Amino acid sequence: IFGNDIAKEGLQEYIDFFLRAHEMRPTALILVAKDRASDVMDAKAETEKYPAFNIAKLVENYGHTSNFYAVNMKDFASCLMSSTTAPMAPLVSIIQNGENKEIYVSGMVAFKEGKMVGELNHDEVRGLLWVLGKVKSGVIIVSSPNEEGHVVLEIMKAKSKVTPEIKDGNIVMNIKIKEDSSLSEQTTTENLATKEAFEKIQEAAAEVIRQEVMAAFDKSRESNVDIFGFGEKLHKKYNKEWNDLKDNWDAIYPTIELNIDVETKIIKTDLLKKPAAPSEGEK
Image (tube, rainbow, N blue to C red; front, side):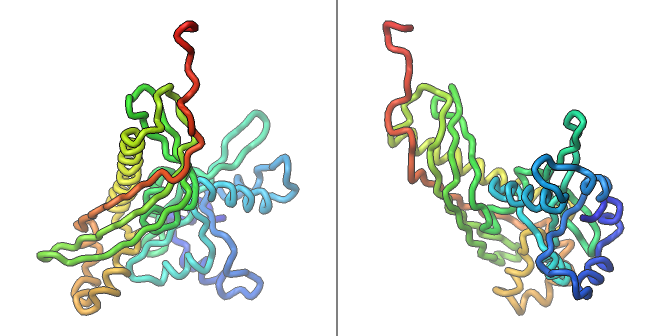
C-alpha cells in the first residue's frame, strides 16, 4: 500500500526494489491510499484478525461489482515498462463509522512515468473495463420504457474487441462490446414482458455502457494517459506507421476518435409474469 504523497512522487524505484526482493511475490497486490498508507493498515475489521486479510477480502468483494479490478506487482511493472500503456492501481479510502474506521475502494488511479496523475471514479473504471473485456458481473440501472420507474439488469457476461484504424490521417479505435444480462428487478408496474419493452431496455442499457466508456476516455484525455492500451494495439496492426507515431504519442492520444458499437441482449428474466399491481376494486 503506497501513500498518496509517495504515489505522486513516483513509484518506479519502489517497484524495482520489490521486484528484486526474493521474498516479495510478483502476485502481491498494489493499492494506493487516499491519504496515508498507515491509516489503511490501522483500520480494524470485526471479522479479520490481520489487516492484510481484511484488505484482500475487500478487494475480492469489490471485484464482483466491475467498478474496480485488482492489480498485482507483475502487471503494474509490465505497464511501467510499456512505452504507452499507463499503469493503474486501486484507490482505497477510510471512512469513520462510529468508533471504527472502515476501508472502501473509492476508484482507481492512473500513473504516467511512474507518477500518479489521474483518478477514475467507479463508473469511469467500469467504462475502462468494458473496453478491456474485464466486466464480469454487476448491474446496469435504466429507466423503464414508460419512464415511471427503473429496471435493474444483472450483467451475465460481456466481451469486447478493439480494432485500430488509420483513416485519412486520423486514428479511430473501433470498439465492439457485446453484453448479456438478466432482467432482475423493476420499480414500475409496467408489463416488461414484451418485445417492444425489451428492445427499449436493451437500447437504454447500451447507451449507459457507451456513456461509461466515453467518461473513462474523456478522463484519460484530461491527464493524457493511455489507460486502454490503444498505443499497443496500434503498434501491432500498423507496425510501420507506429515508428512515426510513437515519439509524438502524448500529442496524438487526445485526438483519437472512438467508434463505439454496443450490442446488449436480455437472455434471462425473473419477471416471467406481469408485475403485481392493485386490482381495479382495490384502487
